[in-house]
Image (cartoon, rainbow, N blue to C red):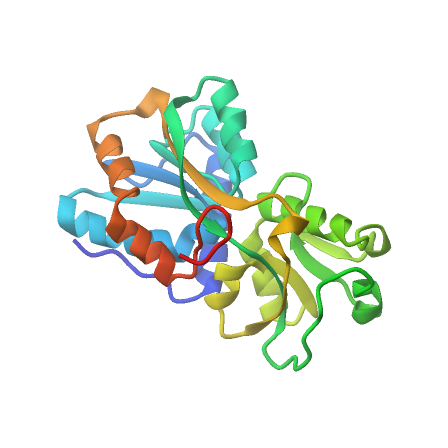
Length: 266
């Protein structure tokens, strides 16, 4: 069966916005599907491809809603009818697990790297390290990041900037956004000269370029745990959850630039 394939990061931003509005202000309606997946925004490209293949093979309908892991976790806590949750970090998965919302142990599907980005016509690279002086490079401009208060991409961005002694100097110089894709779009549209996103987001956009990679030791690992939601567990959800852990699915993650849980290339 066919499903629309998103054509740009702008589509994902709109999709995430629609999903968040629907989740925050009503109990539904949700798209009718055998299985509903709540997934972090940075998984949109790869998961759409995986779902398309799975639907063709299994003859099932799967719907996915993409937003910040923090928003999705709180909506599951509030009773949203998700069958599978895929977070962009372990914190929000642990949040649900401690409260009894998960069925079985989470499984790590993939890892990612944190990168510094600029618009595609930016020519210089920036050496990531102590004394890089991002505040000086920004001048009067601001940096786009996911909101560190709750979004995993923003949290690890803060960790990396603190590791290099840059965080305090950048106070008041951030554009904190709802999710990592929004940070990417802000740089694409030149609303910010620099941003911090995941490597796979950068690879998906011709409108930006990577100007630096944050070493793994500068922040906690970026991983994507998945789990079944206890209240909605059924045979269809179990089948999809198992498929997400198969070698063909791992190969799709690799092709989209995702890494192992330790940040190493697959």
